Image (tube, rainbow, N blue to C red; front, side, top):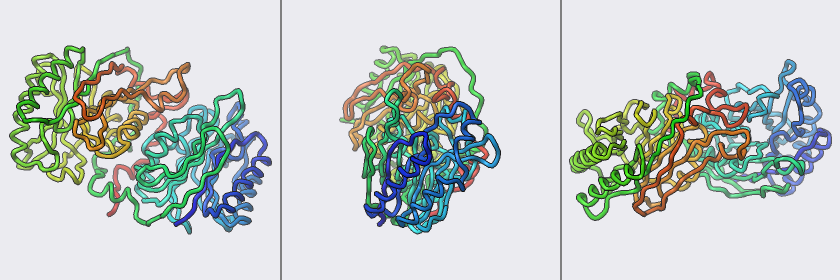
Amino acid sequence: MIRVAAAQFFSGDDPVANADLCRQWIERASEAGADLVVLPEGANRVRDFATREACFDGVEAIDGPFVAALQDAARTFNIHVAAGIDLRGDEAPDAYIELVMIDPSGAIIGRHRKHFLWDYEYTLYRPGVDDMPVIETDLGRIGMIICADGLIPEPAGLLALQSPDLLVNVLNSRGPDEMRIHVPQRARECGCWVVASNTVGGPADGLPWTGGSQVFSPDGQRVALASESEPEMIVADIELSGENAATHAARGRRRPELYASLARPAPTMAEVAPRPVTVGAIQLSWYHNDTFTLKRAAAQVAFAAERGASLAVFPELFHLRSLEDVDRGALERSEVARDVVQKAAAANRIGVVATFVEEIDGALAHIAVCFGPDGDVLGTQQRTHVSANESWATPGDALATFDTPFGRVGMLIGDELDVPEVARVLALDGAELLLHPTRWTRPLDADMTAIERVVENRVHLVSAARLDSALGTGSQIVVADRWYATGPPPLPRYPTAIRGRGGFEELILATVDLADTHDKRLGAHIDVFADRIPSMYAPLATETLEP
């Protein structure tokens, strides 16, 4: 059991005054009994630089007085200190955004240079190219991440491979989406505790930094939260078990042999003409009996076509009463359901996606099928990442995207959404629409995981949910909101979600523009494809987590 603290405040343009401010927060954390205090990104000074050269001149080297002041405070108050500090590189005009870890002796025991920068930062700083280090400390194995590093999945994925006990995240964010989705989602994916400190406040006439410093448990549950407007410190007692939850969650599920796209340069995205398409999520699952269920399914397809949908998605194995106890009887029932869905697609001139139990080489498999408006099969996807509650299903050996009259699509089934590499590979391979038959098995998957997948990949996501979801969560369509210079700044990072009601048969519809998925920007200078550093990602396509 250790005690952690996160302090949030605003640093002005005087590094000496800021060093004194940091010392005050370090002292307060020590008085509160904390073993570790985390200070925000940019703790040494506000970024008011006009040019890269001015930035280099305005920050210090690692052996400068600001870092020395933090080292002295760590020694004096006998505490670990993690702080976000902008530092000079070895050659002008290179500067980097760094997270520096200092132990109670005052020694620097870890450094991480921000890998994925936020928008304007690309005009002032260089991105780091370190290997996302996890450092051994007296407190446990600590991973380090900085703010926008968490807007794409690869940095957290590299950390998860190293099974950290604790993730320290320092932020300088003015987006309320950080505290709501990005920080907790990366905690879930790394399977470890997260302590995050964000800047708060700022000049009265500017967009404020949003605070919301927090501590998250390995399952993404918030255990401490600061305000979004005031300087303050939060403290939490956390237990580092030494067993990383991501190891257990990913055992038998991570498939690095399928992730070669992660280590290759992303395709160059070209602007395309508007291509609106209306998509629907059919919220339906087995009830009463097979005959009635399939009758309702055909009626829902007809209704979706009548409402103008080009494509409709059914939930995961909607025609079966249970998804756990699947046997060869389910195979026969799937054959009947497939025939009904295929004929309904052709009769109503609409694309339809549904999943079925099929036999492949004598074994049962869970297959998503995309029928075209002629009833022809446009593409299939065998479930590749099989979870414990679907042990009957033989995993597929490829992730595929394919062209259709309603765009280039990729399909993922159920809790494959939880594995960030699945959606990432499909997006890198050109998917404009991710079609997701599901039943929602984990809390926050709709509210958090699904939103994150759209942010990090800039694709539209259609999730159709069963009526009998234990969570009571409904279907959802998440729109890849395009970045506009005049639009609300947080919107591309916290996109629009159209939601259905859990446990209620209905159809939800949305008209999305496929052209929006060809613009991967989150701001004027940041692109979730172009700004990746694929040369760093080879471990994601070669390594797996050990039991």
